[in-house]
Amino acid sequence: MNKLVTIHEGKFPIDGRELHEKIKSKRDYSTWIKDKLEKCRFVEGRDFSTNLGKSTGGRPTIDYFLSIYAAKHLAMLENTDAGFAIRDYFIQIEEQANTLKQLAAKIETSPVEYYTIAGYASLRGIKVDIGKANLLGRKATKISAEYGVSVGRVRDPRFGQVNTYHLDILKETFAEYDSVGLSQYEPMSDRRGTLIS
Image (tube, rainbow, N blue to C red; front, side):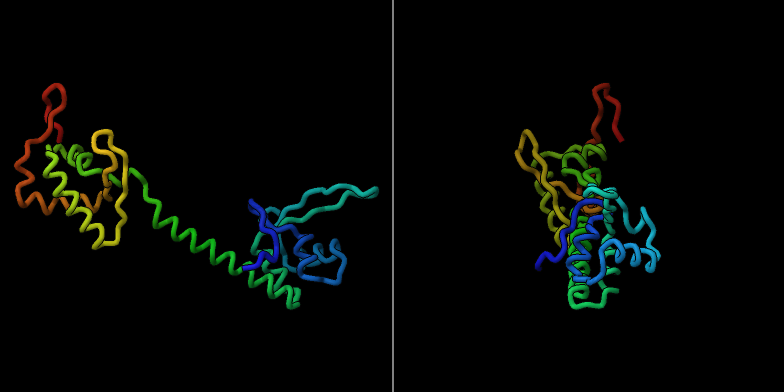
């Protein structure tokens, strides 16, 4: 996708002067931007912001910075081929941003919701040896794949990289294995001998 207009960081990423130039409006910039902002009922702070620019000997210029929504709206209203191309460009940018947000939402899960087999067993007060942890890990991996839930990885000082599983996956994994003898393991106790429940 060709970059038709520079998109800066922040709430108002579009330079109104650049948009005016790229739209190829025949009107004077200052008159054009003020007229469009008024006709569209745009609100400063919501749809655009202003900054005083450098003076060229007379009054300082006013620079307008627009939200993508406002810039897309102004481009469409210009009713030129360039205006429609810029509008389409902004729509593509928004679609890409939405796709990235959706991907990020799928990827981002709070680390609090992911535990290792040993960590979850410890929370439940169940003693799990390496063989049983390995068996439970394979089952949790299988259940994660069935539900399409990602398996995380953390560094363990004893074993290198180990898998972490979502809390719901671990609940199901341990529930299935409770019925085949996992509950035979003794509950863990703290240093004083108090049982951890």
